[in-house]
Every structure is written in structure tokens, then in C-alpha cells.
Length: 167
Image (tube, rainbow, N blue to C red):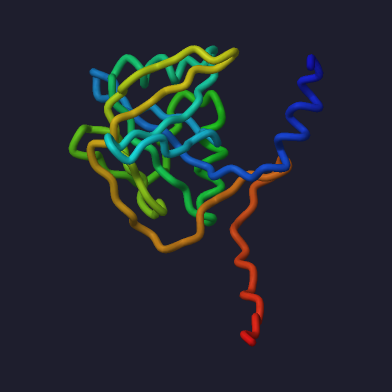
């Protein structure tokens, strides 16, 4: 299977949540990148993962810090995702945030945040599998999460419950 266009098209049928992974370099400069590959890995110990592109200079900076925070974006935060998906010099301009206890940026208005230490990094084709040990986490805004599906941003739309009669 060498057709990357078809691969992307077929897998685009599966929606993904949109997150921004952040950290702070030694000089205090915040860094971050949009990801659609975040997942939980283990309850005991609590582990999560995301899959950064091996060519990403932002991932290299985050990896060097040894820690990161996953900001789960709400459906009202598409602009933040777009801003962090670009190679801008300062992606944090105009983004209100605070620092976690470990020093990673947490955006105002996120659905949830997960603060982690880098546990392991594995090569996986043209990406890495970055596994984080969860140190702290919190749910913030009750908004619906931002999704990416079939090449566009989307949102959760609940399915009405079926009227199932017993008998």
C-alpha cells in the first residue's frame, strides 16, 4: 500500500479530537503544536500518548524539556488550533493562558488539560509515539470538544436516544 493520498482519505473517515501540546523551554519561551493524535494509554500507571511528526522542530523543543501539557480544545477554539498548526515565530500571541505547576502553558477555556512528564518516545514510521506519565489534570470548560473529520473541523452532535419500548 503506497498510496498515501488514499490512506489519508480513508483514515479521514475516523474523527479525531484536536489538542495543542505545550511546554516551556529553559529560557522561559513557551512552545506548542496542534495534534489530532492524542489518546489515553493506561490507567495504572496513568499514561497518555500523541504522535508528533519526526520533522517537527516544535516536537524536538518539547521533547528536550522532558514535559508537556495536552490542552484539549473546545469547539469554540478552532482559531487556536489553526494558529498552532502554523510555523509562526510566536504562536502564543493573543492566547490567554497560565502555567501549570510543571511550567507548561494551559489555555483559558480548554475542555481539559493533562500535564505530563515524557515517559518514553518510540519511532513509528515518519512519526514518533510520545508517551507521557500524567502528573496532574483537570476538566475546565463544559464545552464540546473540537473535532477534525474528513479534512474539516467539526463538533460533537449528540444522537437522540432511541425510544425503546420494553415488553
